[in-house]
Length: 96
Image 1 (cartoon, rainbow, N blue to C red):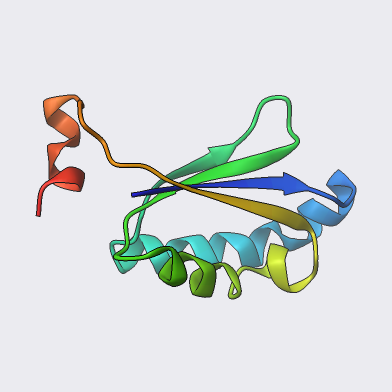
Image 2: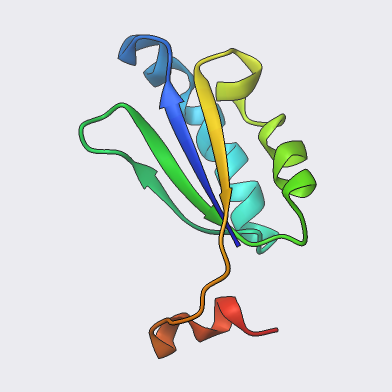
């Protein structure tokens, strides 16, 4: 499982311009089952995506499709983590 942390490096006006295309990118990966949750940071300095893939390389490839990446709107930090404790409602995302 991975946490993808986006940090905006452009103005919020520039971010807003690309939100519709970014939402299409997100929806594609929700439909594929890779993305589990996403949302903006507060204060609004970027966003977080929680994803499940086999490898960090998969995440790095997926990120290249994001309009925020393509238009250099955000920087990305990828953190892999292995859940060892979780709520039963989250089990579907952990167990295979």
